[in-house]
Amino acid sequence: MFWLLLAVLADFGFVQLFKLGQRRRHAAPVIVAANYLTLGVMVALYLLVTGASAPPAAALALGVGTGVFFISTMLVLNHALTQAPLGAVLTSFRMSILLPVAMGVWIWNEPLSLFQAFGLALAVAALALMPAGGSTQRPGSAPAILGLLVAIFVLQGICNTALRAVHYQGWDAYFLHILMAAGFTGGGLGLGYLRLRNVEPTRPALLFGAGIGIYNAISTPIVLTALSHFPGTTYFPIAGCGIVMLDNLFAHFYWREPLSRTALIGVGVAITSLFVILF
Image (cartoon, rainbow, N blue to C red; front, side, top):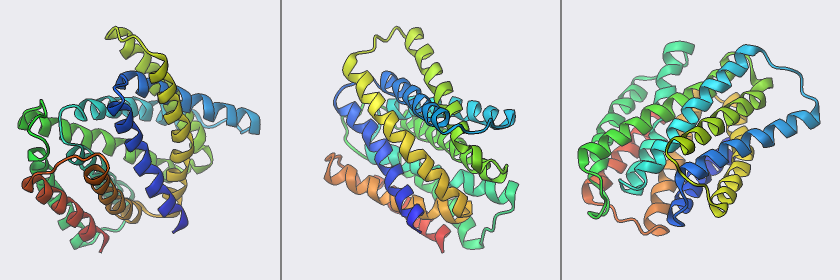
């Protein structure tokens, strides 16, 4: 249970740091690229110092593929933070745990009760309700916001499924190698995105992104360790319940993000779905 609680707190802090960067008006693509490059460098240095054995090529391939979805998710997430209410964006991001739960049952035969299946159906309803929340000054229209929320849900769900696959492939001993490959891939693609969009990195944004990368190098192994101790149908719902509630409480009381009645219903349905899955 210790690793599970630690993973909840670590995962919660990761996205809140990106929100802090947005509030400080740092360019999100710069933060994302610096984060993943720093993550790759930090893990590579650790593996070099400890003299870790070489991983299978397939494990590195999984890391590369995960890195592609890492960078895609964070770029979409940071764009969504400028278009949609914080509570809706973060709830969609956290609700993506439902995808690895479903994939765990389908691919790895993890247990899923009838109540948990009902919870998955509630999650779909919650996604349709959340775009209506938040400040009316947000620039995104409801259909555009819904599209962003769905994209975040799917992309982050794939990331979570890839992380879960590490254990079922028998690569727990190589999860740092996979994380290193993901970091370098995400960082490299992030640099390419900056060149393509002619975004000029600033020193504060680079330093802020590097700080998140250091945090990420500590938090992601914690999550992977927790995943090695619990089946996905147990870990993801419990972690999701805790993180979604923390996200929305933090959004309302710290970031002062208003939530409409419809959005509150959507968040309530989302949290309810996670409790149904849990029990």
